[in-house]
Length: 370
Image (cartoon, rainbow, N blue to C red; front, side):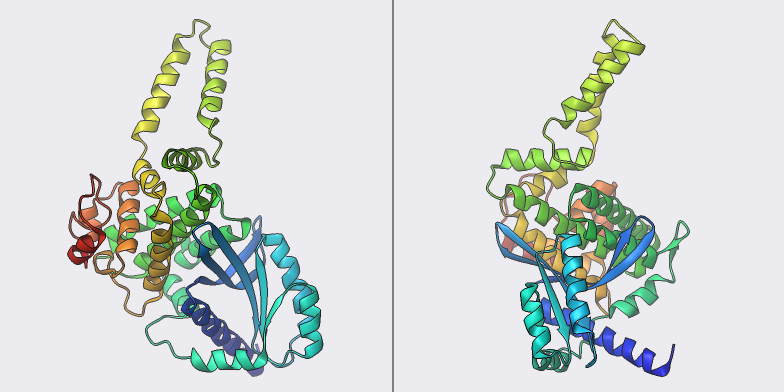
């Protein structure tokens, strides 16, 4: 790469970091460099993926294309980012670039694309160029490249979980994040006496879990608790929210057994009983109960923001030292799911969401936990 090419790349990374900080200052959850993949092939990446929670009943996803140069191909970029928005199902596409001409603005308006003007772009770069408390995405990737788990380094693992965002937030993506987050949290507990790269990666996955649960829960934001509970239970068990999924799987299994193994029906009855007992022992009930609470959505969003920030912190905190109560609750629930002791992860039994009846106010809990 030429010297000018490296300089352009550095300027582009700085612009993405600054725009990311800007959108976070507005209250959004923001990720940088989200890969768009089809099969094993990386098609492109999203400079910024911006998730906002405008109301209790709505969510908004924007993709931001950033070019920190004065001679950008504005018309081509507008067409490209509009197509990407359509492919990903995002609610909005935004272009941020220096030197955007009036004609490019008008063309973007025709495509219903928002444009951050040159003067606003420069002001954002100036205002948000300094963030000593936060590692950049490039710095974090370099840290993750040094740790290998099952022949893949942490950077590659995180790129894979990030790419699920571009397929849409559904239970498929959510369950992948949940399993990966639980695994990384277990590895962090086992291998890192002090928080390190694996802890950072666990925080990142837990942030995605929280965002996923927040987004999925929007569908039943006006439903009663039992409907929300069943929605999450079915989705986490079977990868989709069909309320008849359990019966469908059981009917299929029983029919196959009756036809090919035991026409008497006794084996089929044993399968039904065993299946029901197995479901009761799966470690998802704590998560289901929390997600189905009416107030959990806003707590999940705050947890996601706090966990993503902890992941990028220059001095990454241990789970017990997280300042966000909501983040500790999510970590506690993932600990339960992964079979970890909350005491081992969070330091004391009181940390995280209580398993029994909660008789303390949130303010009282926060005073005990922090």
